[in-house]
Length: 76
Picture 1 (cartoon, helix red, strand yellow):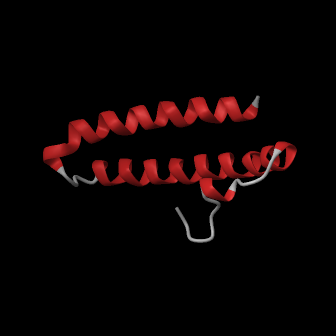
Picture 2 (cartoon, rainbow, N blue to C red):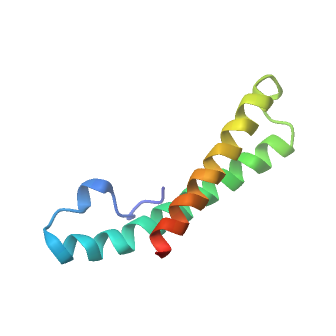
């Protein structure tokens, strides 16, 4: 994550204030994790870590599915 980004511990507060913080924090976190996932995919495509390629590719797919699911839940 980038410096200056919100962290889970930053979500102190109660009620609607916490909901407002989460509404900003979660989409930002999901977008940053998507960028990290794309970086991993590019590294794998360029031939990095050949001995771990299959495991990392499976992890990347699962992470993509999780992030897509979370993005849909946040949009609701």
